[in-house]
Image (cartoon, rainbow, N blue to C red; front, side):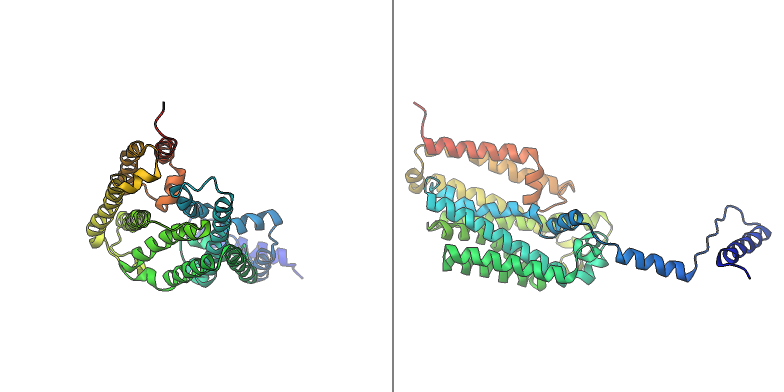
Amino acid sequence: MQTEADQTFSQEKLLAQAASAAGVSGISVSISTPTAEAASRATTAAAPVSGIRKAKAIVRAIRCHQWSKNLLVILPLLAAHAYSSRSALLGAALMFMAWCLVASGIYVSNDLMDIEADRCHPKKKFRPFASGELTIPLGIVLATILLIGGLGIAVAISVQCAGMLLLYAACASAYSLHLKKRPLVDVFVLAFLFSSRVVGGGLAIGFAISLWLLAFTSFLFLGLAFLKRCSELLRIQAMGRIHLGSRGYGVVDLVVLQMFGVASAFISVLVLVLYLNSSVAETQYRWPTAMWAAVPFLLLWLCRLWLATARGEMEDDPIVYSMKDWVSWLLGGCIFAAFIVATLGRPV
């Protein structure tokens, strides 16, 4: 009686002879039995994920690299010159932690809801939950801990902070579920999600947000939201496509979206100029004239972002892109230096 190995060898020999008789060369024949294939699949599915690998997957799932956006909660602290107040510093730090936890909880929740779609996506299929590195039950537990932990910290600061964070979570969830498919509504919601961080930071430190700061950040983030959509449209245009999936935009909308975005960016700079020329700035800075140096640096940064987008170099969110761009760091340092000089006063 032939063994299974002998049968496999005989099958390979017969196929090789048949291929030779047909005049086909260079064919490599491999036979794998159904039992072997099933065993291979079972081994792959049962392969345990190491602790280090799982920890790295969790870090990727909660999007730690996106936490840089939450530094916007510190902006009211700087604008109010309240960095010498321990209570304000503590409030801003706690609000930053709360926002990071809630935002990460929303990211995990969205990944769990979109897991089937992500598995069919050429890039998103490598996400921890879509690829199977992390299990769905673990994701549910992780999202629950992050959301409850973040809201708990916000409640410890004040009820107003918790309410602002809940509003952010609700809008972010609505955006992920439906609003991101509505043209123009999506970019305004994105701008609100950024501006809400600034408002939340003001509530955390106990200082009222000025209309100047609210207007400046609103137009600035609206311009960045349009920039994000333009970068996506330019990417699909390079791929030969004309529609941005379910987003509701097409390549035909690119020109008008660029006009909206550039106009919003320049209006934010105009708001800053009007503020520096007002009597309010004179009461906020010892040497307000020094803050005028920040205007060209801010304008240069915005123009650089739009130029990088037009060249197809904007592959990330503009905030994440700036965190990786040394020129953005240099311009940001110059703006911060102008702020320090204006705050300290004219040198003697």
